Amino acid sequence: MVKISEFQMKDVVNVADGKKLGNIGDIDININTGKIEAVIIGGTGKVLGFFGRDADIVIPWKNIIKIGEDVILVRYQDAIEPKYIEEEA
Image 1 (cartoon, rainbow, N blue to C red):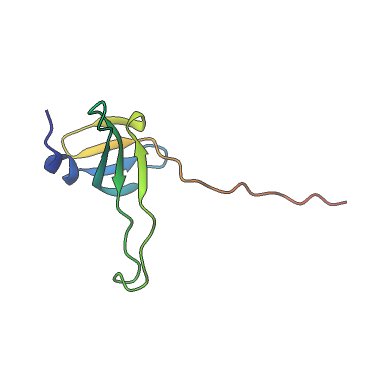
Image 2: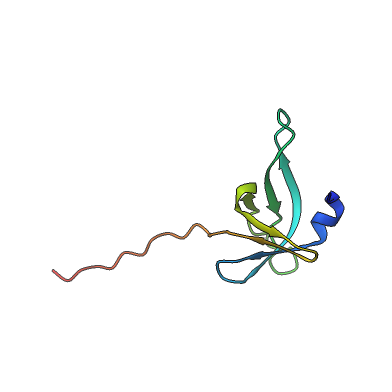
């Protein structure tokens, strides 16, 4: 069994690109079932926190691949707008 405080200390790494996403700041729990629905990684501050912060990253529990001693491996794909290539007429 893993305590929430231990869970929050682990680095979260995206297996899609090997990038560290941060640390878990919050957990979304379904109060009816008692199951964890998602983990939430708090957005990082911009320029020492003066100009707001990035949006939180919500990772559904089903996207967690492996919980190790130091790292949590997840599958996360950032919402990227598709790029359209203009065709010559």
